[in-house]
Amino acid sequence: MSQNTMVFLFRYGAGEHVNFLPALPELCCRLQQEGWHCEHLGFKSDEVVSKDLSKACTIHNLFFRVNRAKRFDKFLKAFLWLSMLPWLGWRLQRRGVHTVFVDETLPLSAFLLRLFYQGRLCFTVHDFFTDIYLSDRWWTRGVGRWIKRRDAKDWKRLDLLFVRVSAAKEYLISLGVSEERIHVIPDSVDTDLFAPGASEAFRAQWGIAEEDVVLMHHGILHPNKGNVRLLEAFAAICDEVSSCRLVLIGDGSEMPYLCKKVEELGIEDQVILTGWLPGLADIAEALRAADIGLVMRLGLPGDDFHVTSTLVHNLASGLPILGVRLKGIQETITEGKEGLLFDPECGSEFRDHLKTLVENKELRGEMAKESRSLAETQFARERIAKEYVKRLC
Image (tube, rainbow, N blue to C red; front, side, top):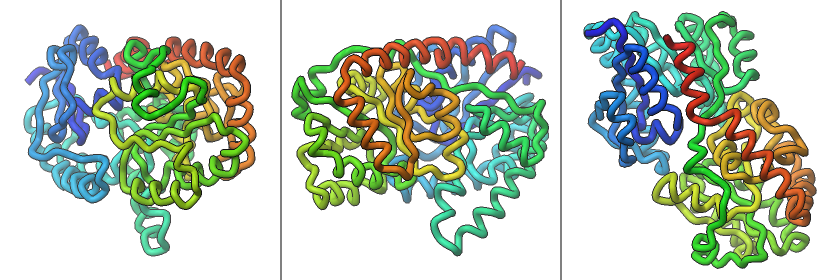
């Protein structure tokens, strides 16, 4: 085994990994040029692995498939993945793998992997699942606090930690993680796939008129996204922005309740829930039918520490942003330039900003240009791949 072997661990599989980290193929190509042998380990994925990634990285698919839209399946496979990490660590240690890069923040994964793997270990820290899944009931909060303490202890022992925004770096430093081990590298986006344009086909498919202004959000429909709060705020202003259509793209555990909520609020004529679209190309096509890109979160503590793929997709698609005012998003969006931000708990501020964007086409056009420019300069795959290589080699 070569001393310069790097193994990427990502439970959703290589195809899905590229959706989360579009710079991955470019990263592996550049590592290969630097003399590294790259491999990828994860569960099976329905997403097709690109030729560029297959050429630069050996793909290993493990036993199961994960359906991220189904909460039970997602939790079950997360548990199975965690239970396999000690075994994977043992196998990688025996093979003499030099570096393992875990590009997600599944709780306890650093602890379990470290039981048997003693090589160079790198992690990405961005989603704090204990805040999302263990903070809503009194009997789970204690477990969540213990897991966070355990993770913080293990993060201090890692060789490299990657975060998306400076706010996350400051948080890790406050936990006692050495500043020299933490590197801020933003999200990446395929600026060729996600690009400005128009999609008459999508509008026609969903009955959206040419004069309608489309406010669009995409992602898993989970309570931490704040969709219920969003629908209530939108319903309160429907009459004032009668030309606005709210489109929610995605599926998840919250879908049945959201459908019911739309009926209760009487906003069926202005809200569209599409369900899952087949792939990223379909999402990119949908965004070309939008006029405003929405970025929504509840505002849980961990929400401050990352920038969602929803945001970078919207920016690359040349959309003015209407987003929640959280630390990571504030690092990315200059209010009044690429978009307008609102307090996640302040429905009136959301409504005021939405009304401003709906009624001012010229302002939307100016912000759209700034959004696309920001995506090209800050989030392009090539730039992000170079940043990773600089830190990993």
